[in-house]
Image (tube, rainbow, N blue to C red; front, top):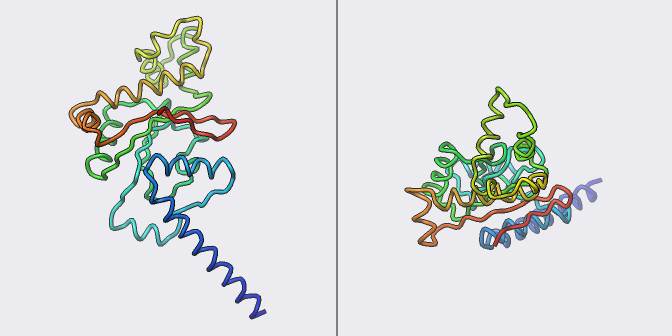
Length: 221
């Protein structure tokens, strides 16, 4: 029994050392490559589950240093930390239905950039987005007297959606990608904080699309 316990402890120690080595290798990558590598691990079903310990929580009491800000939909099927195989303190996450961006979201992003020094911002939409589907069907339904209508109205006001002809309005993927483009454009033109930093190439804003079938995230580069 003692020999078995010793072997189990040794195996656990070796596994822990291997995981820490892999985590250090991943952390040395540039932010976008960290996300790509994490998504590849998720898709291949070989996640590291990094930074998920109580010790990590204690480390973060001294302050957080996320390497990326992700603006994504609130949909329960696309939690960024899981699909990018990240852990506590890695992602500054901002989530709203349809990843719509208003003043509160902009203020949160500015905080991440100015105070947490995030240099990469990702606007991520996804397949079969409910908010976009609600917009697509809005013309066939009565005006709703609830706050969901506010989301629909926001998406309907986007210039990127308006240029899509009515004949293609049933193409949800096309509408989702237009919504992603809108989010990227909002951030790239946002003053007084984000636009000057983007113009000086101090931060990067890119769009991304999450495929529910494959689990793959496709980046707009």
